[in-house]
Image (cartoon, rainbow, N blue to C red):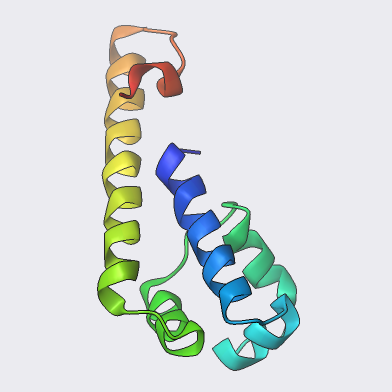
Length: 102
């Protein structure tokens, strides 16, 4: 899990808390039934679908631009980590991906 995935997860949790919503309340407003879905997003165990991020902007009353910035940070780190893993697999490098990223 990359630094920005954790950052995006933390961002999502922080914005929910700022909106003074429990996970159960937020899940209902987002159109889901189980809080496990949101819990997985907030812990970085699942990548949030764009439609969910869009709905979070509405429910948590945050700008799409603010969410976009956090999403793009995650996407860049995910791409870099994937490229490093492919490189390392091809050349037999065994270093940890996290130590490779700036």
